[in-house]
Image (cartoon, rainbow, N blue to C red; front, side, top):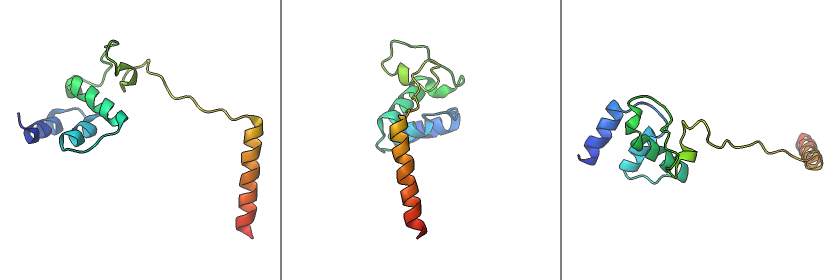
Amino acid sequence: MKIREHIAMIKKNGLSAKGKKELVSHLEGSRLTHRQAIHAHCYDCMCYFIDGRMDCRMPRCPLYPFMIFNRNRPRPTLRRLSEDHLGKLLEARKKRGNATSK
């Protein structure tokens, strides 16, 4: 199958999910970020999610921890600021506010 036909098939039959746009961009020759490449790979590997958006349940895949529908994937944690650091930020914000109001 030629690339143009492949892209047309994905656009027509592929479920709208994370990775579709990225896979099409890749096939059209665009560069992808690491995250976009992972999403594109999962979209391709899961046959364009035609059966639905779900976890692939392939824990041996090296990209599985980053799979968008993996319920156990690591989530980014919120950064907690120390009281000292928070105080310095607020003080700087107040100084900036006073400088602009003059």
